[in-house]
Image 1: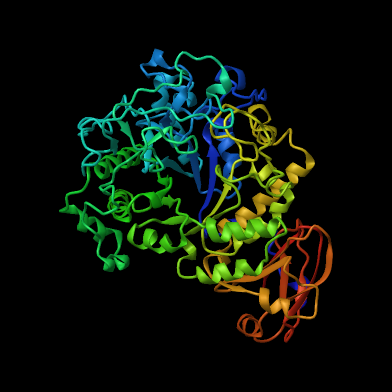
Image 2 (image 1 turned 120 degrees about the horizontal axis):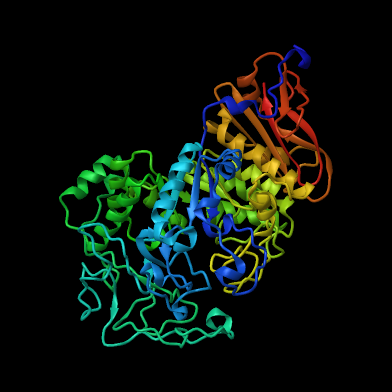
Length: 606
């Protein structure tokens, strides 16, 4: 059979397939639609501008969806502490002494039953405007994820829109004791909170005068700080803008609730829900169950849980089983950084997905920086085989440095081979952070925190992303040619990740076998195959900044025999605009490839 007689798959023919796995687009909501490019350090909302829910127009959402996106994670939606004055809407002012940045941290939530007033065109209608965004997202074929931050809340939590029967955190606490099971907070009995001593010349709002920025904040008695610091005066490096939630964990670390039997690792969420049905649980558990049910009822499709490992796994069994009983398809993603806890939080805690940060992302970052060995990627993937569909892959998020920042790789194109490997190596979801697809470098000095990570604390514009926005047209009209090329690359790779049937199937590393060949394959390359039924991909990424020829990749004879017992295999590179067939004759089990700098090949095998 000659290559000319075989129908080319075309560069995007797999888009007609059903979805193979989720693709999550994380967007920092208050930055997304902001067209203001002033970026004054510590600038006010009026000076630097702010994005709104309404900026996510149908056109903007279509632009996100074309990246293969199934879920949008709207980061920073719950009402958190801010410095902007909203007293005209009945919202109390927040104290800059316990707010990080001008716009505030999205992880210091002040009201779980409402949304950040910054994000609304009319703050009095902020909840209705978010509900409209939920509907608009659904109409555009995507689902909605928001943050839940179970470990801590803002120093002054104050919900204005409590549903009937609910009360604020701490409202019924016995503050005369350090701990009680149904207290929502821990207390430093007999001591008042003191604002941390400033470090490295830090001043709230960059030193700008403010009536509340006086080094004082009234909290009697002091509460434990969010990261668990127990002093009435936390350190400047503590999460001093937050207070820790009590889940029935005594100060000595022992548990004041029923433990989940080990056998429940193997039980479905329905059995977990039955287990908790007749148990008494700490009050904080019930509060977060009510909060998540409230948002599910409004159409939210899932949650990203901040620092989930700081909360007992039994709570997650209780909460997540309740969520799944309401919406079995809810998307539950957790931040867990201890690999020895991964399986507990997935199996006992009933999480759907965890960040694959500490091992896969970290190793991939070192390879991108030229200090790592691609062999670590194969080793990590092999060790994760039992849970790999549940380990979400990413290259950027709000906590991590931008690829293009000098502190990371200094060049967005260095993310190209890494994105191919990250997105295509496993059955896990793929996540991309807004602006990543156009090479945002995070270089703006905006106030609280250092550049290299796009700010989550201040009002700002995001320059490369703004060039894609093009004043609200969302057509990429202001992008440079290199930025347009990068976005098109991400579109191709993310859609392969989302829709190619091979993503649902098996994986085998070709790395070690290729290293053993007499060719130019080295630790700067990484190769693997994916297949499902008769759909197959051969993926090879080159992390080097120089071109290299005659890179020989080993394809196991057993796979070739399985795929094509007789005759030739034909390969097309799905990343080429017009794929040209490569013929692999019967009995041939090596492929020689020439690479341009930072190039990847994603071959569909027929």
